[in-house]
Amino acid sequence: MQAAKEAEEKNAAQAGIQVIARAASILRTLENHPNGLSLGQIAKSVELARSTVQRIVAALAAEDFVIASGPGDVRIGPGLVRIGASAGSNAADLIRPHLRALGETVGETVDLAVLSGGSTVFVDQVPGRQRLVALSAVGERFPLHCTANGKAILACFSPEDADDLIDESLGEHPDFPLKNRGKLRAELDQIRKSHIAFDLEEHGPGISAAGIALLDPMGRPIAVSIPVPAQRFADQREILSNQLKLFRKRIRAAIAR
Image 1 (cartoon, rainbow, N blue to C red):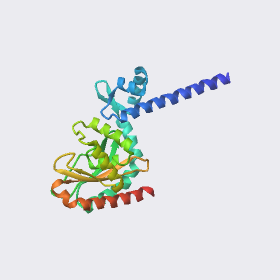
Image 2: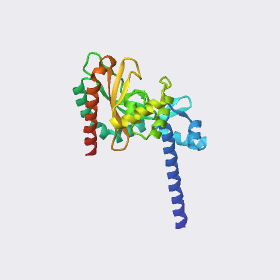
Image 3: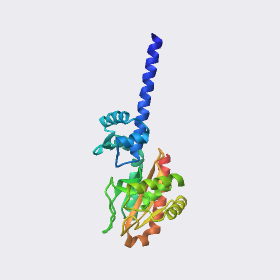
Image 4: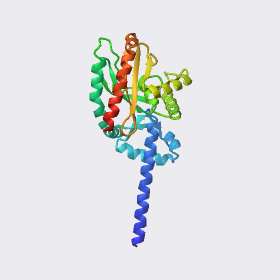
């Protein structure tokens, strides 16, 4: 009887582990599709029965880990985002005073962004002091393949993984087609050496930017960029690049402590 009870407990534990693994697989799939997927699409991606996916999604929704993104579609929910933010809060707290100091030094807007699927997401910002500045809302999503912070993040990855992320970026941002993939690959190779990425009015007319990226203690890329009205970017390009390199050096030292 004791043996039967132990076997039952073992089977229950294995079933629980299997459910957790399946839930994790579903969440990873949704991570790569920030606009959401249908239950059928999720089931196909994770190779599970739709009914199984429906039960797991319902349990995740009860914890606010997924939410509806449209009729029949679901996406990552705020409950999971809060957990992720908590896990990364130490790095953000370390970076914030340096971000403010960089903003004071250059007098321009300074943005902090993280990778989310095929996009960068702005998570912090120090507004510039100039009369004409470039500002974007915290939480806004931008393409990887045509922005300074996005290119800097792409350069954190191997050429093969960067190519996959470029495809994701193009899928999430169809209004920004890629004209020359070979040219972007060559640019990423240069960024891996210099650590500085540029957006020369590629994402939008009238705004250029310089950016850098590095990995946080959990191995996730974070990027800092300085967007500037194009009419004065050329004169400041070298100064901004040097300040970003110094910033990267300081942050790497702070994170390593």
